[in-house]
Image (cartoon, rainbow, N blue to C red; front, side, top):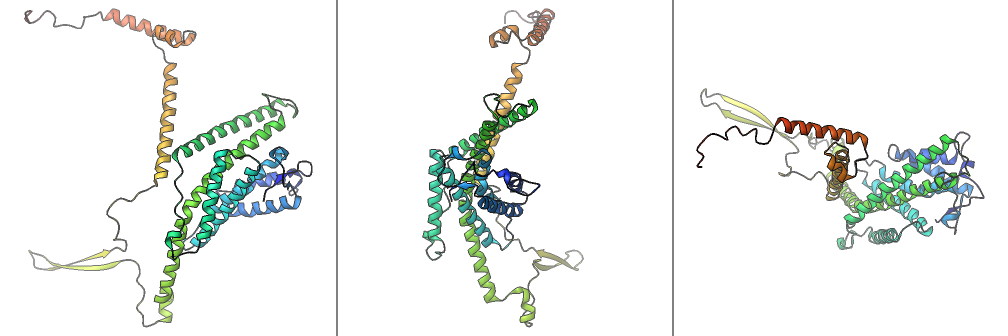
Length: 393
């Protein structure tokens, strides 16, 4: 559903309980996406019903027609999808996990479709959105066909590393922009500037709108990234669902170990899972007495003889990129610190730092100490063996 806001009809601040507005309820809900996804889903669902009841949005309008206070609500489907993906899946609950992922894919599709209509997506983002949509539709067409494994949708191609790096840098840039805008808003509030007056090129509404749009740009990048990751997870979830179904089918034919004693009293009790116990009997060579040694064969003895990977190639690449960024930051910091260290005056002139009085004074002290050391240690004074030995060699 494509929706935009009618600013003249109703404001988000007009809705909600006597204690909280609709906007306050929305931001309180999305703060629970990671810590309490189940509660977040129920709160967002109630907020969505209130938005529909208020007719807060209408079709066929542009981004300019949406009020500033209504822009955050455009990302409601994105946060609903994030909460669904973050729901914990216990043992034997892969079907529920698959259902949650499929719902999240649908919600991300609705979110990005709306942004495409509002012309918020870039050309590259639009192409990536349609590629993911085509892959999802192909999966729906192949879903349930277990006989022909060749028709199963493969794992999504790993996103290009350059694309991931560019998206990461763009997100960092947007985050810096958001911090600057928030700092400007706090400064306006401290100075008591009227809403219609400008500061640094922003009045209150344009500042709030720029901040809301910057956050929306971050959300669209996160939606594309998480949609792609969920598409790569889906085939693995389906494989686990099939394995669970096969295991349950085998249990039905072999009998349920949990109630085997009641239905089949003549059947031996199920294994305890503690592993086999083996007794070794040996004879002492000196005393001739028998020795008994009991060993336990652990149930997890059959393990690979090599170290298993602890992360995916994608996670390794992300870690290496983070380490490279940290090294670059440390190098820049070291260069900045070195630039402010005292050194020879001619080096200060070369670096254009001769106007820094404190640095010039510290450098002059360094020059005096160097001159004093040279006076105390004239050239060649350390050569104590100069007048010894055969001069012919």
